[in-house]
Length: 247
Length: 313
Image (cartoon, rainbow over all chains, first blue to last red; front, side, top):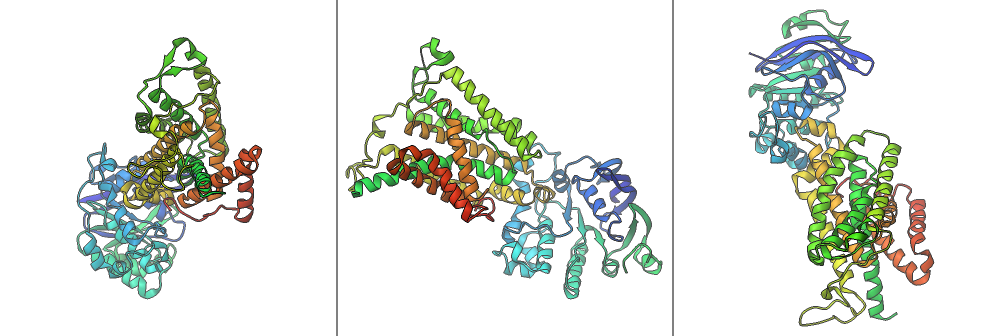
């Protein structure tokens, strides 16, 4: 069953036309990767799905779990089941690890849920104990300020924080291995595989093609704001896509 | 200087610092978290003073009200102390939605001009309605004279510490504790701290940051309203008090480091003590003393006492 569907999305940053009719879909339980060079429009695609502004979607639609979420605000989209691990991690650096993880549970506060579209309010996708099992280092550092963690630990916290959201159906990971040491890249990749094995649908945005193809079931290639190729991991591996990718 | 006189001096300084602090704290939080300079914050102090007066007493005002004889509920000081912050809290909610929110993304200069205009207009309206003559808060008997406790009476050395000043300082201490606890221990406080650092990311975690921001704006307003009642009990109430308290409070916020609670507390204490000292050694320089202090502090620390502190610290 299709969980997420983008249909002819045109997204703009002011006068700049970034996405030029992106169409793609993700089925429930799949791990799909979106590949492309810097500036291809990968992050704009993530932001278009996540409901953050900019960009402004001027035409096309984003459908999630049967609902048209094109005009939904970011907080409703998060409560609706889409979690974003953004590029650059964007942790709350002055808050402790524990406070960063608590934030996603605020979504269940009464003041935060009133008058929503009947969304949210459920249990966390992963409880704190499960997260500490997945990322043991976070438990060791739970009283530490997030800004003092290493790059790898910060990435783990960024993923863990999103997994605390209630009723998560789709996880968007924007460049999760960016700037990490090679052994940490593999560790983060393993964690993503483990999360996907638990049945969560994942859209993985990557420049690191090898790592992305190791984890994903299939993928799309984005170039200059449009999808130029799609196929299974095997097809992507065998196709000559050097023109569009950093290999 | 005798012990009694020294204690009296300290309480004068602390009570003045308390008033500044109660007003400055809302300014600082809103400036630090929402990047909104709210000169209309002075209206909340002004409104608090007059609303408290209408609740506490029943008296003849000037201006448009002069034809109506004595006006006011006459419920006394304590009901005024409790009800005024509640009324100003509601006014704060309305101010955030109608005046502040539409200007969050606007230029600092535009915010300054609009809110300053609101303050001046409000002061003029108060002057027209209540008259330009100062009014004095009626003080209940238990608030008169030096602080006195049951059984022990006035403790040694406290004969110059007036009950009203001790009350102002004690209430402020409690309220500062409450605001620190709010940031440290509540979901709202956590959401404000996160939203201040990266409001878009907080929204991507499903948090509606507008709501905690509205609450903290209204709490700041309630504190200013309460300061209006307490300030009205220490000094005169006139239509010009909004501006009189706002400018030094803004100076304190900048001196302490915008958004820093600790900085605002320390800035207020410094201002309170310098103010009290000036009343003793150079009374004509009382008002100017705070600005001189700010010049010294900002020369030494151009970004304020706690320049890098985050909201809630």
